[in-house]
Length: 389
Image 1 (tube, helix red, strand yellow):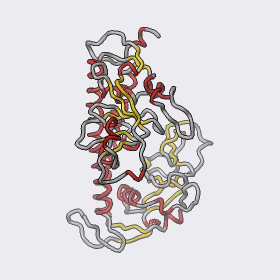
Image 2 (cartoon, rainbow, N blue to C red; image 1 turned 90 degrees about the horizontal axis):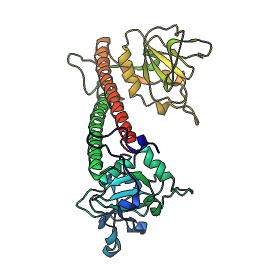
Image 3 (cartoon, rainbow, N blue to C red; image 1 turned 90 degrees about the vertical axis):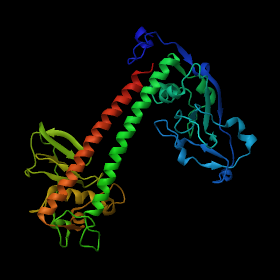
Image 4 (cartoon, rainbow, N blue to C red; image 1 turned 60 degrees about the vertical axis):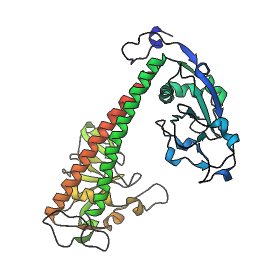
């Protein structure tokens, strides 16, 4: 191993020494499987909560509110009770998935398919290991000791053999606190994104009339009167995409059901924005196609009829349950006939513009949030790969 391999690529100021390699057993006080008990022992009025693999998120958070309760003999579980700072490592299916237990009002133990790991806290900062086990480095180490079977299994003895170049406890703490702050920032931005998405879903239900009702629950000021019920062919002209393989490489984007594919030297003869909706495969994710464009034969493009606003129609497309229109028993498929006969509500051109602009603004904000979240996740991944050796 070269000198460069002995230190992380990203490091806090003040820490410059090489990092020594250890086996995990050197910093572990104890590691024990959770106890086995009968499924009949689960009881909402029980005395202990039992953490399963499904109760730990990929970010290493224990989802305490969903952990099931069991009624078990106190002496039977005494040595298994989790203490603050214990690691909970899953040893089957998601082998190596690790959460860190933080003190709760109730008693908790690991399930029979998880290991309780108590660290020597003078040498090891528990939260550091929570993040370490999310790295590719750790996953590669874990894979060395997994027993391959119908269901993969990681033996507790194998956990102790995991090798890691462990920095000083002070540096461990710095790394863990930094990553905790970064994860919290990501969670905060995810919550903002989700709230905005839920607002959009709620508005889609309230600014369009429900079946059997000719007025929406929410309406812009100054607009009144009943909406008109139409079949979709009265609102848009659904057109078929075409094969692109005869075209040369260029700067015109080609779109399929999954989005952008490549760029060619010609566009379809229609030269205005439209709405893409899958004919085959992904049929439930419509999106706006910015002109000029080309679509493949598995992607329809819908052109709003005269006096119908594109953004308004796109909102209608997002409201439709396309899966209900699936005409195949295999790969999901839509036909023009099925699309054309979908019943929708429309209103006047001015009100359509107002509604379309509202949803366009919401979509712009959502796109911005998604781009920011992607950047934060990229930073997180870079830190996980470059702060550990």
